[in-house]
Length: 227
Image 1 (tube, one colour):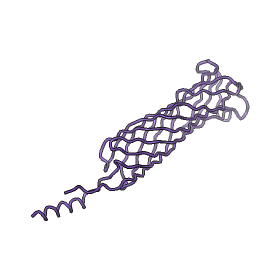
Image 2 (cartoon, rainbow, N blue to C red):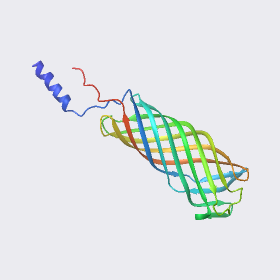
Image 3 (cartoon, one colour):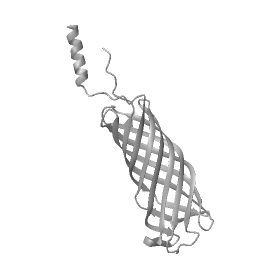
């Protein structure tokens, strides 16, 4: 009888969906998707909102190396995002559109993230978290037709503190591979550059991204329970 019970337990374990051993393992991840950048409001030479650059929908992509502690993950991330000029660039009462303006904004960042997971490893799992790090933001608002004054033209970059908030879901495709969907709010508060006239310009970079993710977990299938 005892042998029969043990045999049935082993058969049940063999037929069951394998549990995934993410806990205590390293992983790598690639992310990519669309991004919306909030309008850039430039304070020029201490004049608040002296100009405003509208940006079109851009892109955001990056890579992650992380470690799964169980309900908590810690990861390092490198990512790059860019959006080109949108409908217009407003400078005081003047508005420049279309071929009159050549502009955009980009940010290269290196972040340390912490994430909390909830849900089963072998099903749809949610996560929330955030990160801090450093970003290099490049700003451009120039004119191919040279109809922008030097005080309105900007082509400079600055590095500084960055932070982000993250949330998403993921699900396994196999013992090692996950796919997911992630939202990222990215923020660099103090971006200080110099315009073409040598005047100080201050702004902030804020973006909202919706990203698809592909993750490879170096852990394997969890060992069967001891009888």
